[in-house]
Length: 495
Image (tube, rainbow, N blue to C red; front, side, top):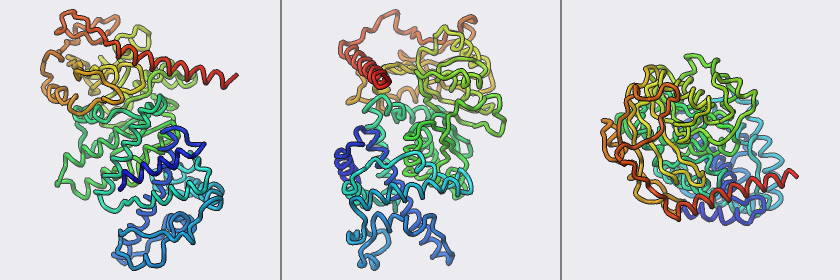
C-alpha cells in the first residue's frame, strides 16, 4: 500500500510545471509527510496523556492541524478504533484555489513562525519553523495538491513496522534522487558503503556521533539502526533516551538536504533530529573546545567545490578545496581516542599541492590511520571521480596502514549498484588487518617524509595494468558531457 501511494504521489507531481526533477518530487513529498507525521505524533501524545490522566496541549493550533485543513474526517469515523483508516469528509476538506491559497498564505507563514516561538533549537517546534522557512510549496494546482494529500493521508506512522516500511521507501526516493543528477548525488552516499564504514568504526551507545556534512543523514540513520540492532533486547529505556536526545548531531548547508535529513531521521525513529541548518565551514576550527568534540565522526564531505578567502581564514591549512577544509574540521572536532570514517577523493592520497601534503602530514603525525579502503569508479553515481575511505583514531601517530582495494568483479552503475555483499570481505578481513590478494599492510616508516604520499599501490598486482572496458570509458565521457552541459547552461543563464 505504501509503495503504491508513493508512486501515485509522483504521478501527480509530474503534472506540475514547478516540479520537474526527482529533487522536486522528494522535497514536496517531504513537507507533506512531515505534517502527516506531526499529526500522528500529536494523536499519540494526546492518547498517552489521557491514559496517564494528564493534560496535553497540542503543538499546532486547531486550524493548522492536518485533521482540520488537510483531511477532516467524516462523522462516522468517531466510532472507529485507534489506528483504523479514516474517511475524509470532502464536503469540509479544502480543495482547488482555496487549498492552495490557504497553504501559501496562511499555513506556511504560521509554521515558519515556530522558529521564533520555540524554546530551543533541539525541539520539534524549532524544526517545524526551520523546515517551513526553507522550502516553498511548488504544487500550484490546488486540485493536484488535494489529490496528493489524499494519498499522504493513507500512510500510517502508528506501528514500528509501518515506520520501518516507510523509512525504506523514503530511502528509495533519496536514492532515486541521487541517481537522477549531480545535485541529488550530493545528498546520497550508497548505504552499503555507509554500513561497512560503521561496522569498521564500531560506534557504541554513549558515543556522540557527528557528521558535519550530513546530506540526507545516511550516516546518522544507519548508525542509529546499527546501535539498536547491536543492543537488541538489551536496549534499555535509558539507552533509548540517550539515542534519541544525546547521540547524533548533523550539520547541513543546503535547504533541501536539511529538510530531507530531518524527515529521514524521523522515519527511522528519531523524534526531534538534532540537525542544524548551517555552513560548517564558517566555524573557526581554533574555536572548537573539548565540550564540542565527538567520540565518532562519520562523513562524506562534498568534493570539487571551492570556498572564498574569508572561509579559508577559519582554517590553519589554507586551501580553496571544500573537502580539504572539511577534513581539517573533522579532525579537529574528534576527541582524543575518537574514531573516524571519512570518504574523500582518492587524489588526496598523492596530491602534491601544499594543502594535501600538509594534511597528510597532520593525519600521520596526530592520528592513527589504520585502514584505507580504495573504492572503484561507479560507487558514486554521476560523480565521475574515484574515492577512498580513511579510517583513523585521533591521538597516536600512524604506525601501520592496512589497505584494501575493493573490486566487486563487475562494472558498477545505476542499474548495477554497490551492495552489501561487495563489502563483506573487506569488513571480515579488516577485523584482523589480514593480507590477501586485495589487501596489504604498509609500515608508516616507509612513507616518504617530503611528500607523505599515501597512494594505493597494490603489491600483489605485479605491475599488471588493468584496462577499463569501452563501456566504462563511454560512461565516464557521458558523465563529463552532462557536467559540461550543466556548466554551459549556467553560463547562458548569466548572460
